[in-house]
Image 1: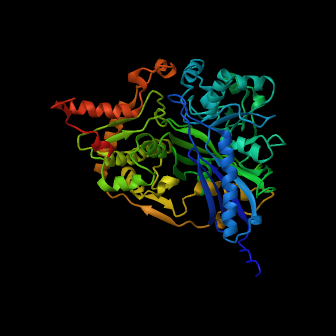
Image 2: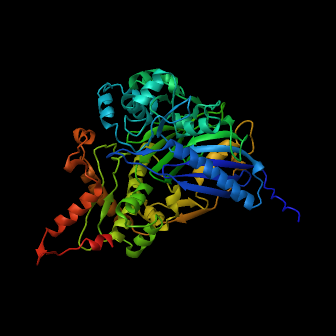
Image 3: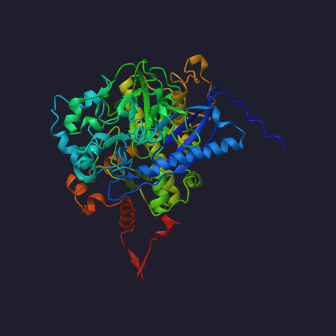
Amino acid sequence: MAAAKKAVLGPLVGAVDQGTSSTRFLVFNSKTAELLSHHQVEIKQEFPKEGWVEQDPMEILMSVYECIEKTCEKLEQLNIDISNIKAIGVSNQRETTVVWDKITGEPLYNAVVWLDLRTQSTVENLSKRIPGNNNFVKSKTGLPLSTYFSAVKVRWLLDNVKEVQKAVEEDRALFGTIDSWLIWSLTGGTNGGVHCTDVTNASRTMLFNIHSLQWDKELCEFFGIPMKILPNVRSSSEIYGLMKAGSLEGVPISGCLGDQSAALVGQMCFRDGQAKNTYGTGCFLLCNTGRKCVFSEHGLLTTVAYKLGRDKPVYYALEGSVAIAGAVIRWLRDNLGIIKSSDEIEKLAKEVGTSYGCYFVPAFSGLYAPYWEPSARGIICGLTQFTNKCHIAFAALEAVCFQTREILDAMNRDCGIPLSHLQVDGGMTNNKILMQLQADILYIPVVKPSMPETTALGAAMAAGAAEGVGVWSLEPEDLSAVTMERFEPQINAEESEIRYSTWKKAVMKSMGWVTTESSQSGDPSIFCSLPLGFFIISSMVMLIGARYLSGQLLFKLDNFIS
């Protein structure tokens, strides 16, 4: 019997979407933006000490290869010829820091994840060296001095990991964010791998001048980081190198964007004033400010949005960053065991339809925008004997929405023109209760594309549009129309404001839990940095006043757990 004829779909483009929680590879039709197939692998996070978050760079790399191969197998099963894949784009979790040996190709330490807090004392010591009337770090980078960004993570590795120190001395060390590590490895690694990054990822290191679009000598000297270990900075859309192994060997890697910039492109926010909010491990609201840097007066970041070609102009964005969004659902699953899978959160929240006065501030890594308060820690408050796991689940979803409201308010104040609606994307947007809550709490419509994989789509668009590939047009008239699902507010404005003001009270109570001494010592103070679960139980014990009847505790914790 003759072999079945392969489907002809025109040029295809693949996208690696390497996030904090998982790795995916997705393949799109460049003419219609249709998602044809994908594969996903969850990535392990390690927490070796309080406040530390690490991942294995080799596990991340192997997950990319696995996702590519599995997706290619699925395409073959669909009778789609993988030789039609003309380019690959890379989108990645930003700021997460890797240092590796260019001779052996091996990481010299685990990846230090963007959420990691171990560098707080480094940040405080460095901040004393910045003149109050000349914050040259912020003016050059658009970023506050924070544990969030790569420079202080590299500084920690240089100070604390002998293998890194030795490799730098012997000129064997290379630094990069996840995009750099992947592109170097996929393009040959020790056999001619390309050591590069793009402007969006470079702008998250605190070493990159967002005006000159170059590594900044003064910043590198301030953080004590040798410039020889830094990757070459390229545009977000050009051919960096070719795949050197696997089913897609020889295919150019020609797009690279930090995940939030990729989502901005995938949502087609190409005009000044257009904004999107992505719900992933964290929550990130970006507003395109065009070709000018706009500096926030309300706790937002100034960052590079994209530069779609070597000779194309750079575009900037204001960004509101929330550390914990989807991560709170994973915490309820992995740490408390309230749910067995992330999808169950919607079912639990639906059972009660309210938090019943319970508020959850998931400040596991301190508070990011608009507060930038590293001393904050997670709290759950407003508990009563009636509170159960369904109310906690609902409060967790509300927390994501309240945090988005805070950064949207800051964005509106900085931009001067309030957003009339909010474009959203990311894995959590599949949760309809979350989306309706978001519309209610913002009191504006929330608009979700029917194809929510906009981060991967943005990376694919950048790759397909690159000079020398040219299979994806970014001209406005050629961009595919996207169908949208719309969520309208269903509560009155007064109720929305009452809930929001109560949330802000809870946020204030989350601050000041951790002092520098307690966060840096090996033996944290019991009142400063015990895990959130302790405060849940403590609150409940205080709530019932430790009253006993016939030696039995009147209130059973089963009400919370079961």
